[in-house]
Length: 242
Length: 230
Image 1: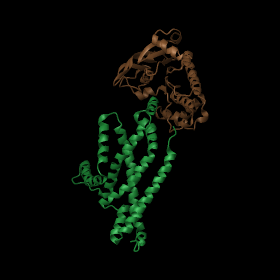
Image 2 (image 1 turned 90 degrees about the vertical axis):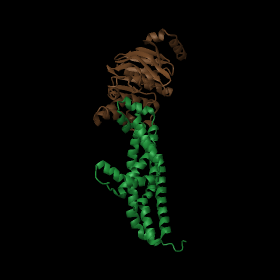
Image 3 (image 1 turned 45 degrees about the vertical axis):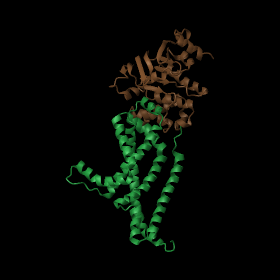
Image 4 (image 1 turned 90 degrees about the horizontal axis):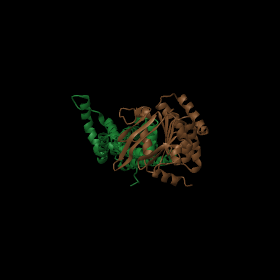
């Protein structure tokens, strides 16, 4: 479904991504983890072309992201993305946040988009908040709306960029619960996160990054039980101490 | 000085001052602010464009307009527009457009430079993540701008845009150099005709002051209402 092949990216004076290759099969959940500044977020933003890269290639459902002839907006409409800081549109109501792209991008009718939006809002447990504005919701609620907004587009895969990093601890689980349910339904997911409990529970594979490189790419049980690289061992010992 | 103050000249000329003069002043203010904001927003988008020739072109226009006195631009366009019209239509003589049309065009183009800078600041005040979220949903550049960035930028900038419009309202008085009967022009004509300079110019100042001051107060009240909650 998603294939990254030898992706490299440079900023003017340093290399953020070095030869990164990995893949996500249909229905698979892959967690990307690693120390901050290791390039995880940059990597996942390359997958739907939000970040350009100079070398290598990425294909999603057989369509090349880096081919200049690809209609990127059209491809992005099929890939859901959830951001660290939610990025709901603050000038639009929750209902409108869910409808806008359905209507303007997919060309759905207003009532169809509204029904779809309300169904998804119910699914994330927020139907009562449809008329509110994002600023009136808690962080956890905003992130659940953001997931519903992405799902409203009927995505073939979902990308999560540190979806719980900006949340207060007591709100992390309400978001993870939605993500676990989604994974159980067979959604193809690529998730950048520090939530190792989530990784253990739902991920088929874990990709470990450090300083722009993919250091380890292993089945979940192997990664946690028997990490091969020293860098992954150090990382795990640091975050699993408590 | 006030002993022989003639209030009656003001009363007598009120219909002329307001129906003829103020109508033109307000029409020019409204047209130039709406047109200027639209063209200015376009300039701001061009200036922020990643395509260098486009952004240099917009930056050049904005900087040129902002470095030339308005009075000069008014003259400039008054004498230039007929020739541009001739060039565009291919007519054999300069196309006479008249002082009013010329002033509408001038103010719109001049104010656009100032509105462009305001809208540029407004667009830049919108977090990058908002653009990313819109793009991730499959929106094109124009959809992202039209539905996500510009509405937020515009709302953030409404108070500044209105403040600029109040300045524009005062600046429209410069059209007197084209002998147009705007509010100040009307007051000035009555003043010359009846020899009542003090009365008319004091009254004109008072009217400009009251309108601008009340408008500023309204802007301040509005400022508290339009802010987007984040």
